Length: 90
Image (tube, rainbow, N blue to C red):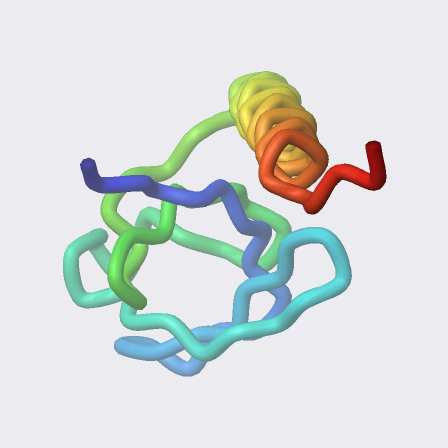
């Protein structure tokens, strides 16, 4: 499965840029988007270090809500597996 993560551009030095999401900044490639179509503050989907699509803030927020929910469920499942596999003291 491939996952693209929404990030906001905070610096552009085309064909590279710095994008931020949830307090984490990463250098990303912007080569897949036209230079005149990206500006600081834009939200982009980042996959394997490259911005692959520009999206609006509402969609970026919706994607993060879904990703946060997936992570929450995975954490719950992981916690349940740990308690199921822990030694019993009967």
